[in-house]
Image (cartoon, rainbow, N blue to C red; front, side, top):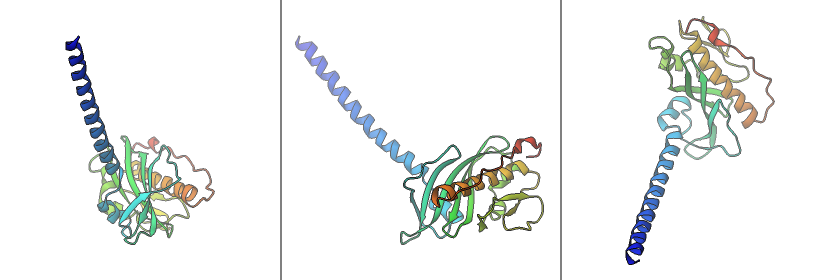
Length: 203
């Protein structure tokens, strides 16, 4: 009987210690996941230089395209815009981006976080030369990818030979714009026109 009680006590002690260790590990993992979901200061410098930090946007629900949304704050804690993590469909698979829209209603920048586009073609959407084209764009109209030098404020010259990848970026930016208008500003937005970019054989 005493042996059974002793064995039970040992098992109870082991269970308690294991539970405490698992709880501690879970808390550390949760903090790591939360930290990884945040936009880095390096990202902010690229997409919204006026911001120095981000905070959760209260009362806004995300969707299948807009994965995360944050308020962008300057050094004094004043809101200067919003930052969106967006997933869209590229030529070879999902493309994940972070996009910023300022309080002045302009797309101030974007950065591709993950993709599987073709090196030397679609992968050029990650290069500074292309990212520079997605800056200071007004949000009055959807962003449009063109093959020639843009003639309108809402036009962006795509990557040569990578029309699908370029349009994927435009789709993500437009999704962020629509989400911003509807959920941040409370505006009514006309239904978006569906464009099947996969019908093109050119990336």
